[in-house]
Image 1: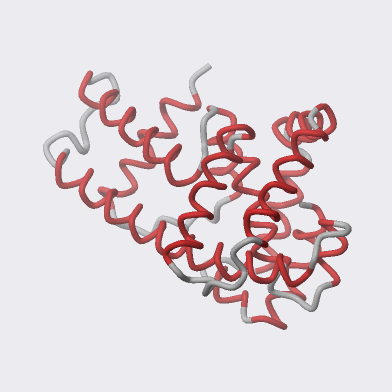
Image 2 (image 1 turned 135 degrees about the vertical axis):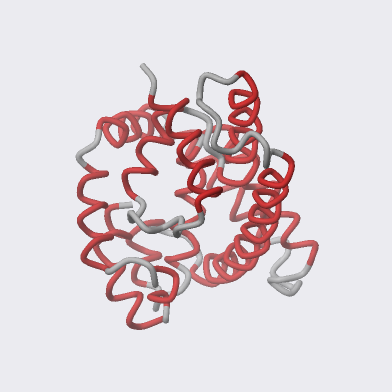
Length: 226
C-alpha cells in the first residue's frame, strides 16, 4: 500500500490514471496518504496483516487461481465480472475495507509496466495481474454506477427526512440503509474505517449537492460518535 502511494504520480503520468484523481491534486493525495499511514487505523491494519499473513496469502492465491482459470474469457465478460464480485465479497468479508484496498492495489499494479506488480505481489504472474486489473476496473466502474443509482433512490425515498435533526428516529433508519450500501459496494464494516476514509477524501469529493452532503453528514455523525 505504501508502494502504491509513493508511485501514484508516476503511474498517473504513464497510464492516464491521473483521470481517476481529477478532483484532487497528487500533492493532496500524497499528504492525505501520509496522514493515513500515521493514523491509528493504519497501525491496526498493519498489525492485522502481520497477524493474518497466512490468510492474506491464501485469499490472494485463491483470487489469482480463480482469475487464471478464466483468462481465456474477455476481461469484461459477465462471467469474469461475476468472479470479481465473488472475490470482492469473499475478501472484504474476511478483511473489511482492507480487502477493497487489496483489489485497488491490484487494479493499479496491473496498469504499469510490471515493476509495481513485483514490488507489491512478489512472485505473482504479471499477465494474471494485468488481466485482473482490467476486470477490476471494469467491475468497479459498473458497481459505482449501480451505487450512485442506489444513492439517488435513497434520496428520493427519504426526501422528507433529508435535513431532519440527527436525533429523529427516521434518520437512524436512513443511516442503517446507507451503512448497508457502504458494506455492499465498498466493503466498509467498522466505524473507524469510515473515519479514515473521510479523512483521506478531498474536501470537495462529494461536490456541492446539499442532499448528498446531508447523507454524508448522517454517516459521519453516526460513525464518529464514541
